[in-house]
Amino acid sequence: MKILVANLGSTSLKWRLFDFSNGQERMLHKGGYERVSDYPKAIDDCLGELTRGGHISGEKDLAAVGFKTVVARGVSGCVRLTEEVVKAMEAFNPIAPAHNPPYITGIRLFAQRMPSTPLVGLFETAFYQWAPEAGVRYAVPQAWYEAGVRRWGFHGASHKFIAERSAELLGRKDVATRARQLYVDGGTSPVQDPPLRVISCHLGGSSSITGILNGVAVGNSLGLSPQSGLPHNNRVGDLDSFAIPFVMRTLGLTLEEAERQLCKESGLKGISGVSNDIRDIQAAAAAGNARASLALDVFVHSARHWIGAYLAELNGADALVFTAGIGENRAELRAPICAGLDQLGIQLDPAANAALRATEGVISSPGSRVRVLVIPTNEELVVARETRRLLEKGGC
Ligand code: AMP
Picture (tube, helix red, strand yellow):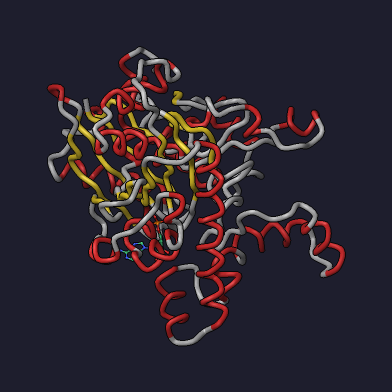
């Protein structure tokens, strides 16, 4: 069974092709295009590349196309992307203005191009379906809550991958199985004592931290929208809700302009004034740019804040995991995030930390109570696995 996972940006199309034949799980191909101006052509080119490369004999060879969809009104989990589901995504465009619209456009184009191939979405909110209610509720009027104003949590595919893989690396097959089965049985497969407590730090262009107990998320630093939690590349992160009416009144911004600035001119770019890429910001900081240094300090401060939140919620941790572009590659940021936490059982091995880049491994010192790990994430694999499961249970 071959499943294509398509990652849709406003001007990019990236993909990975998985094959689940003969009980195996193999990635056959990965590729993508940047600066896409003609999306239908990009889809054609992708299918052409896969066919010419001999990875598929034609598009009929694809059992489904899976998407890492973000958020929709009244829909979560792994579902067939019918027009009704796409409309439910559209209804939540204001919550994910940078993410939902390109997905909606791309999904509709895939549906036109491949009308008989099932299109499946694994929503980023799915991993948080079992988070405790007290942790997802904002103190807003009931009508706001009923309209959808609550903590949804995102990066679900990535944190779910970390839940499974960290449990495997720590020798907890029982917990890995629970995490793997989560969308099937809601986390009821048996686990032994002691509980496994993992804090997963997905640090990249978009960042979030989640607490995971026995393979099941207890919460995520992203709340109602992917504009919350830690500061992102150019999106704001946590902000007091009264800041928006305040700047509208005092700076004379329209709601649309305030929204644009929160999504495009804020985050690390907003503080540093340099770039939305941490590499440029680090270079500027090293050259003495004070705003660039401050952006890095704010990022580190915020990461520690959320790690602290989950240390309290989980009553400590067995593992602290770093993943995604920054988490996997930037030892210079992992070090200050973990600094001075020895009383909480976290002690980095500086040499191991400095040496580890984009590969799996342990970066804590042998005496550290909490194992600090780097695990490259694989969100597309999680999407492909869940898509396959939906097909097998006849959900398409
Ligand atoms: P992501 O959204 O996971 O692709 O992460 C993007 C962020 O991670 C950017 O700020 C990059 O500077 C950083 N990043 C991604 N890849 C690398 C790399 N190979 N080396 C250093 N930093 C990287």
